Image 1 (tube, rainbow, N blue to C red):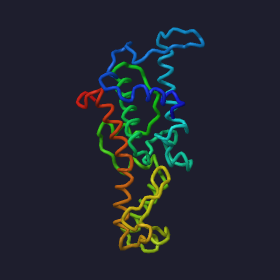
Image 2 (cartoon, rainbow, N blue to C red; image 1 turned 60 degrees about the vertical axis):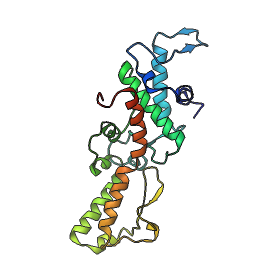
Image 3 (tube, rainbow, N blue to C red; image 1 turned 90 degrees about the vertical axis):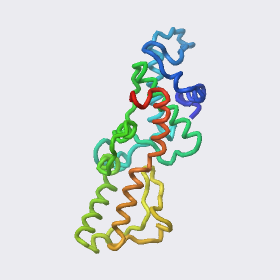
Image 4 (cartoon, rainbow, N blue to C red; image 1 turned 135 degrees about the vertical axis):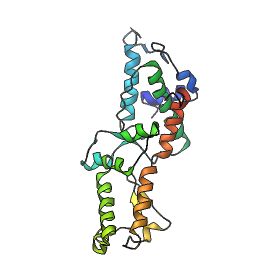
Length: 230
């Protein structure tokens, strides 16, 4: 990550308070010196660096954001959008997500746009709008349709419809990692008798899988732009 523009700026500003990111229009956070070209930063190179940051975060070099399962499966809507990686949970990840939130605050206050291509569920979460399972249709259509079929089987008490999927209490998160929904879930079969529980905990896992990472972004953003203002 340190070889990227984002990584270099993170190393420089990782301990900078949020208030330092609160900038009026035209008052840049840093200056760009184009040594090879001998350029003077009149704003263009600065904005180019901000664009490079987003390009880095949308690349394979940094693991903080990932493509949706819909993108990987070439199915459903909003396949071009990015979501946060639910497996990024250590202290460095926390600080980098907070830094991203501060950059968002910088963008709002200085009116320098960041070309993030994030899924609407992230923007809704940052604004504390209600998130529902319906939002996951444009993230993971296959999983969304599976839950709908299981709900149909439960309502009709159709044992065969439940059994045909041959499920255990384990699912993959949006990064493809196996997650046990309950203790020893790998050994527990989903049946007509317990499918209601499976649906319940699977929905909760999906709705909360990015909760911590988005909270870190929100903390960084709120340290620049007060929550009441946002």
